[in-house]
Image 1 (cartoon, rainbow, N blue to C red):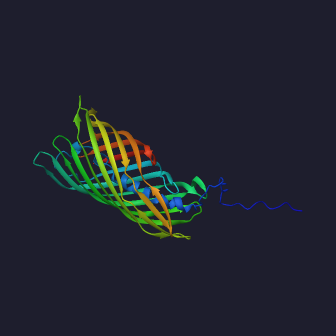
Image 2 (cartoon, rainbow, N blue to C red):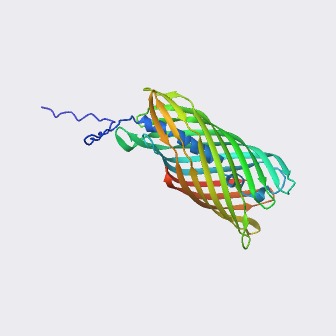
Image 3 (spheres, one colour):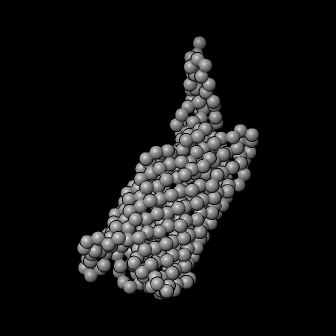
Length: 337
Protein backbone atom coordinates (compact mmCIF):
# COMPACT_ATOMS: atom_id res chain seq x y z
CA UNK A 1 0.00 0.00 0.00
CA UNK A 2 1.19 3.58 -0.60
CA UNK A 3 2.64 5.45 2.42
CA UNK A 4 0.20 7.54 4.43
CA UNK A 5 0.03 11.25 3.50
CA UNK A 6 2.06 13.67 5.61
CA UNK A 7 0.23 15.46 8.41
CA UNK A 8 -1.54 18.65 7.44
CA UNK A 9 0.40 21.67 8.85
CA UNK A 10 -1.41 23.96 11.24
CA UNK A 11 -0.75 27.57 12.23
CA UNK A 12 -1.84 26.85 15.81
CA UNK A 13 1.03 25.69 18.07
CA UNK A 14 0.66 22.85 20.54
CA UNK A 15 -1.41 23.99 23.49
CA UNK A 16 -0.01 23.68 27.01
CA UNK A 17 -1.35 21.07 29.42
CA UNK A 18 -2.64 22.73 32.60
CA UNK A 19 -1.76 21.37 36.00
CA UNK A 20 -4.48 19.88 38.14
CA UNK A 21 -6.91 22.61 39.11
CA UNK A 22 -5.17 25.21 36.92
CA UNK A 23 -7.11 27.27 34.40
CA UNK A 24 -5.45 28.45 31.18
CA UNK A 25 -7.36 31.08 29.22
CA UNK A 26 -7.06 30.93 25.44
CA UNK A 27 -6.94 34.32 23.73
CA UNK A 28 -6.69 34.67 19.99
CA UNK A 29 -3.49 36.26 18.67
CA UNK A 30 -5.20 39.54 17.80
CA UNK A 31 -5.94 40.30 21.47
CA UNK A 32 -2.40 41.30 22.58
CA UNK A 33 -1.80 43.09 19.25
CA UNK A 34 -4.77 45.41 19.73
CA UNK A 35 -3.99 45.79 23.45
CA UNK A 36 -0.56 47.22 22.64
CA UNK A 37 -1.97 50.00 20.43
CA UNK A 38 -2.86 52.52 23.21
CA UNK A 39 0.53 52.49 25.02
CA UNK A 40 2.38 52.58 21.68
CA UNK A 41 0.32 55.62 20.63
CA UNK A 42 1.01 57.34 23.97
CA UNK A 43 4.74 56.74 23.60
CA UNK A 44 4.73 58.10 20.04
CA UNK A 45 3.00 61.32 21.15
CA UNK A 46 5.24 61.87 24.18
CA UNK A 47 8.40 61.33 22.11
CA UNK A 48 7.11 63.78 19.50
CA UNK A 49 6.56 66.43 22.16
CA UNK A 50 9.96 65.85 23.80
CA UNK A 51 11.57 68.27 26.25
CA UNK A 52 12.54 71.93 25.94
CA UNK A 53 16.20 71.14 25.25
CA UNK A 54 15.30 68.46 22.71
CA UNK A 55 13.22 70.98 20.78
CA UNK A 56 15.18 74.22 21.15
CA UNK A 57 18.68 73.17 22.15
CA UNK A 58 19.71 75.65 24.85
CA UNK A 59 18.46 78.77 26.67
CA UNK A 60 21.27 80.93 25.27
CA UNK A 61 19.84 80.42 21.76
CA UNK A 62 16.73 82.31 22.92
CA UNK A 63 18.40 84.99 25.03
CA UNK A 64 17.11 87.94 22.99
CA UNK A 65 13.73 88.98 21.62
CA UNK A 66 14.65 88.37 17.97
CA UNK A 67 12.25 85.73 16.65
CA UNK A 68 13.52 82.47 15.20
CA UNK A 69 12.30 82.28 11.58
CA UNK A 70 12.37 78.48 11.77
CA UNK A 71 13.67 75.67 13.95
CA UNK A 72 13.52 71.94 13.49
CA UNK A 73 14.75 68.54 14.54
CA UNK A 74 14.70 64.92 13.47
CA UNK A 75 14.59 62.11 16.00
CA UNK A 76 14.60 58.34 16.17
CA UNK A 77 14.49 55.43 18.61
CA UNK A 78 15.00 51.71 18.91
CA UNK A 79 12.40 50.77 21.51
CA UNK A 80 11.60 47.63 23.48
CA UNK A 81 8.64 48.06 25.81
CA UNK A 82 6.30 45.78 27.73
CA UNK A 83 3.22 46.25 29.86
CA UNK A 84 1.42 44.21 32.49
CA UNK A 85 -2.21 43.24 32.19
CA UNK A 86 -4.55 40.55 30.98
CA UNK A 87 -2.33 39.47 28.07
CA UNK A 88 0.95 41.30 28.97
CA UNK A 89 1.71 42.75 25.51
CA UNK A 90 5.19 43.89 24.49
CA UNK A 91 6.54 45.88 21.54
CA UNK A 92 9.93 45.75 19.81
CA UNK A 93 10.42 48.24 17.01
CA UNK A 94 11.59 51.64 15.81
CA UNK A 95 10.37 55.22 15.85
CA UNK A 96 11.30 58.00 13.44
CA UNK A 97 10.01 61.55 13.24
CA UNK A 98 10.63 65.18 12.45
CA UNK A 99 9.39 68.42 13.96
CA UNK A 100 9.55 72.02 12.80
CA UNK A 101 8.29 75.31 14.14
CA UNK A 102 8.68 79.05 14.31
CA UNK A 103 8.29 81.84 16.86
CA UNK A 104 5.33 84.17 16.47
CA UNK A 105 5.91 86.34 19.54
CA UNK A 106 8.88 87.58 21.53
CA UNK A 107 9.32 90.27 24.16
CA UNK A 108 11.62 91.29 26.99
CA UNK A 109 10.13 91.10 30.48
CA UNK A 110 10.38 93.82 33.11
CA UNK A 111 12.94 91.76 35.03
CA UNK A 112 15.22 91.39 32.00
CA UNK A 113 14.07 87.96 30.87
CA UNK A 114 12.66 86.92 27.50
CA UNK A 115 9.27 85.47 26.52
CA UNK A 116 8.89 83.40 23.35
CA UNK A 117 5.75 81.83 21.89
CA UNK A 118 5.31 79.89 18.69
CA UNK A 119 3.76 77.06 16.71
CA UNK A 120 5.05 73.75 15.41
CA UNK A 121 4.06 70.76 13.28
CA UNK A 122 5.46 67.25 13.51
CA UNK A 123 5.11 63.77 12.09
CA UNK A 124 6.33 60.51 13.60
CA UNK A 125 5.89 56.86 12.74
CA UNK A 126 6.35 53.81 14.93
CA UNK A 127 6.37 50.22 13.73
CA UNK A 128 7.45 46.92 15.20
CA UNK A 129 6.58 43.43 16.36
CA UNK A 130 4.19 42.57 19.19
CA UNK A 131 4.35 39.64 21.58
CA UNK A 132 1.95 38.63 24.32
CA UNK A 133 -0.18 35.96 25.90
CA UNK A 134 -2.23 34.08 23.32
CA UNK A 135 -3.29 30.50 22.56
CA UNK A 136 -2.40 29.55 26.11
CA UNK A 137 1.23 30.65 25.77
CA UNK A 138 3.12 33.56 27.27
CA UNK A 139 5.28 35.91 25.18
CA UNK A 140 4.12 34.48 21.87
CA UNK A 141 4.88 36.39 18.67
CA UNK A 142 1.42 37.61 17.67
CA UNK A 143 1.70 40.37 15.06
CA UNK A 144 2.82 43.91 14.37
CA UNK A 145 1.79 47.56 14.69
CA UNK A 146 2.43 50.29 12.12
CA UNK A 147 1.29 53.64 13.50
CA UNK A 148 1.79 57.23 12.37
CA UNK A 149 0.94 60.48 14.10
CA UNK A 150 0.63 64.00 12.68
CA UNK A 151 0.91 66.63 15.41
CA UNK A 152 0.33 70.37 15.69
CA UNK A 153 1.03 72.42 18.76
CA UNK A 154 1.92 75.68 20.42
CA UNK A 155 4.51 76.63 23.02
CA UNK A 156 5.37 79.44 25.40
CA UNK A 157 8.82 79.79 26.95
CA UNK A 158 10.21 82.25 29.49
CA UNK A 159 13.97 82.58 29.87
CA UNK A 160 14.86 84.33 33.13
CA UNK A 161 17.75 86.77 33.55
CA UNK A 162 19.80 84.10 35.33
CA UNK A 163 19.23 81.54 32.58
CA UNK A 164 16.38 79.70 34.27
CA UNK A 165 13.49 78.66 32.05
CA UNK A 166 9.81 77.76 32.22
CA UNK A 167 8.32 76.05 29.18
CA UNK A 168 4.70 75.10 28.43
CA UNK A 169 3.48 73.11 25.42
CA UNK A 170 0.08 71.92 24.19
CA UNK A 171 -0.06 69.48 21.27
CA UNK A 172 -2.78 67.63 19.35
CA UNK A 173 -1.94 64.40 17.52
CA UNK A 174 -3.94 62.64 14.81
CA UNK A 175 -3.19 58.91 14.61
CA UNK A 176 -3.51 56.62 11.61
CA UNK A 177 -2.20 53.12 11.08
CA UNK A 178 -2.97 49.44 11.48
CA UNK A 179 -2.52 46.56 13.90
CA UNK A 180 -2.27 43.12 12.28
CA UNK A 181 -1.84 39.62 13.68
CA UNK A 182 0.43 36.87 12.36
CA UNK A 183 -2.55 35.33 10.58
CA UNK A 184 -3.19 38.58 8.70
CA UNK A 185 -6.27 39.64 10.65
CA UNK A 186 -6.26 43.21 11.88
CA UNK A 187 -7.88 46.59 12.36
CA UNK A 188 -7.32 50.09 11.07
CA UNK A 189 -6.20 52.40 13.87
CA UNK A 190 -7.47 55.97 13.92
CA UNK A 191 -7.83 58.45 16.72
CA UNK A 192 -6.67 61.65 18.36
CA UNK A 193 -4.56 62.60 21.34
CA UNK A 194 -3.88 65.72 23.39
CA UNK A 195 -0.58 66.15 25.20
CA UNK A 196 0.31 69.02 27.55
CA UNK A 197 3.65 69.66 29.23
CA UNK A 198 5.04 72.09 31.78
CA UNK A 199 8.73 72.03 32.67
CA UNK A 200 11.38 74.22 34.20
CA UNK A 201 15.06 74.31 34.99
CA UNK A 202 17.51 76.45 36.94
CA UNK A 203 21.23 76.45 36.01
CA UNK A 204 23.75 76.62 38.85
CA UNK A 205 27.16 78.00 37.91
CA UNK A 206 30.15 75.75 38.62
CA UNK A 207 33.85 76.29 37.95
CA UNK A 208 35.42 77.01 34.54
CA UNK A 209 32.26 77.66 32.56
CA UNK A 210 30.35 74.57 33.64
CA UNK A 211 26.76 74.66 34.90
CA UNK A 212 24.56 72.08 36.59
CA UNK A 213 20.86 72.46 35.88
CA UNK A 214 18.17 70.66 37.94
CA UNK A 215 15.00 70.18 35.88
CA UNK A 216 11.42 69.06 36.46
CA UNK A 217 8.67 68.26 33.97
CA UNK A 218 5.05 67.10 34.15
CA UNK A 219 3.25 65.67 31.11
CA UNK A 220 -0.47 64.92 30.78
CA UNK A 221 -1.92 62.84 27.95
CA UNK A 222 -5.45 62.12 26.78
CA UNK A 223 -6.00 59.55 24.05
CA UNK A 224 -9.15 58.68 22.12
CA UNK A 225 -9.10 55.82 19.60
CA UNK A 226 -11.96 55.10 17.21
CA UNK A 227 -13.98 51.90 17.45
CA UNK A 228 -12.99 49.22 14.94
CA UNK A 229 -13.86 45.66 13.99
CA UNK A 230 -12.19 42.61 12.54
CA UNK A 231 -13.84 39.49 11.14
CA UNK A 232 -14.57 38.08 14.60
CA UNK A 233 -15.57 40.97 16.87
CA UNK A 234 -16.13 44.66 17.29
CA UNK A 235 -13.26 46.39 19.10
CA UNK A 236 -13.58 49.50 21.28
CA UNK A 237 -11.13 51.39 23.48
CA UNK A 238 -11.74 52.84 26.96
CA UNK A 239 -8.54 54.62 27.96
CA UNK A 240 -7.42 56.38 31.13
CA UNK A 241 -5.56 59.68 30.97
CA UNK A 242 -1.84 59.31 31.58
CA UNK A 243 0.45 61.51 33.71
CA UNK A 244 4.24 61.28 33.52
CA UNK A 245 6.78 63.13 35.64
CA UNK A 246 10.48 63.77 35.08
CA UNK A 247 13.25 64.89 37.42
CA UNK A 248 16.56 65.59 35.73
CA UNK A 249 20.06 66.99 35.91
CA UNK A 250 21.96 68.55 33.01
CA UNK A 251 25.71 69.22 33.22
CA UNK A 252 26.89 71.62 30.51
CA UNK A 253 30.19 73.22 29.59
CA UNK A 254 31.48 75.76 27.09
CA UNK A 255 34.45 75.54 24.72
CA UNK A 256 35.50 76.46 21.18
CA UNK A 257 36.77 74.44 18.24
CA UNK A 258 38.26 76.23 15.22
CA UNK A 259 36.40 79.38 16.20
CA UNK A 260 33.04 77.62 16.65
CA UNK A 261 31.40 77.90 20.06
CA UNK A 262 30.53 74.46 21.45
CA UNK A 263 28.41 73.50 24.44
CA UNK A 264 28.88 69.80 25.34
CA UNK A 265 26.57 68.36 27.96
CA UNK A 266 25.55 65.25 29.87
CA UNK A 267 22.05 64.58 31.16
CA UNK A 268 20.36 62.17 33.56
CA UNK A 269 16.60 61.85 33.98
CA UNK A 270 14.32 59.87 36.24
CA UNK A 271 10.97 59.27 34.54
CA UNK A 272 7.87 58.01 36.33
CA UNK A 273 4.57 57.13 34.70
CA UNK A 274 1.87 57.45 37.34
CA UNK A 275 -0.15 55.09 35.21
CA UNK A 276 -3.66 54.15 34.46
CA UNK A 277 -5.57 51.25 32.97
CA UNK A 278 -6.39 50.96 29.29
CA UNK A 279 -9.33 48.72 28.37
CA UNK A 280 -9.83 47.11 24.98
CA UNK A 281 -13.27 45.57 24.60
CA UNK A 282 -13.83 42.66 22.23
CA UNK A 283 -17.63 42.71 22.02
CA UNK A 284 -18.37 42.18 25.74
CA UNK A 285 -14.94 40.82 26.79
CA UNK A 286 -12.73 43.36 28.55
CA UNK A 287 -8.93 43.16 28.19
CA UNK A 288 -7.00 45.52 30.47
CA UNK A 289 -3.42 46.79 30.20
CA UNK A 290 -1.60 48.69 32.95
CA UNK A 291 0.83 51.51 32.20
CA UNK A 292 2.96 52.26 35.25
CA UNK A 293 6.72 52.53 35.09
CA UNK A 294 9.83 54.12 36.51
CA UNK A 295 12.82 54.46 34.20
CA UNK A 296 16.27 56.04 34.12
CA UNK A 297 17.63 57.93 31.11
CA UNK A 298 21.27 58.85 30.57
CA UNK A 299 22.72 60.65 27.58
CA UNK A 300 24.77 63.48 26.19
CA UNK A 301 25.22 65.77 23.24
CA UNK A 302 26.76 68.92 21.87
CA UNK A 303 25.44 72.26 20.60
CA UNK A 304 27.45 74.12 17.97
CA UNK A 305 26.72 77.80 17.34
CA UNK A 306 27.74 78.11 13.69
CA UNK A 307 26.60 81.73 13.21
CA UNK A 308 24.47 84.21 15.13
CA UNK A 309 21.40 82.74 13.43
CA UNK A 310 22.30 79.07 12.90
CA UNK A 311 23.04 76.46 15.56
CA UNK A 312 23.38 72.70 15.21
CA UNK A 313 22.57 70.15 17.88
CA UNK A 314 23.08 66.39 18.23
CA UNK A 315 22.35 64.04 21.12
CA UNK A 316 22.02 60.39 22.02
CA UNK A 317 20.64 58.68 25.10
CA UNK A 318 19.66 55.34 26.58
CA UNK A 319 16.68 54.54 28.80
CA UNK A 320 16.15 51.48 31.00
CA UNK A 321 13.37 50.56 33.39
CA UNK A 322 13.81 50.62 37.16
CA UNK A 323 10.39 49.21 38.02
CA UNK A 324 6.98 48.52 36.55
CA UNK A 325 6.68 48.25 32.78
CA UNK A 326 9.65 46.97 30.80
CA UNK A 327 11.52 49.65 28.88
CA UNK A 328 14.73 49.68 26.82
CA UNK A 329 15.11 52.69 24.51
CA UNK A 330 18.04 54.02 22.50
CA UNK A 331 17.41 57.51 21.10
CA UNK A 332 19.13 60.00 18.83
CA UNK A 333 18.26 63.54 17.74
CA UNK A 334 19.58 66.24 15.46
CA UNK A 335 18.54 69.86 15.61
CA UNK A 336 18.90 73.03 13.59
CA UNK A 337 17.78 76.56 14.40
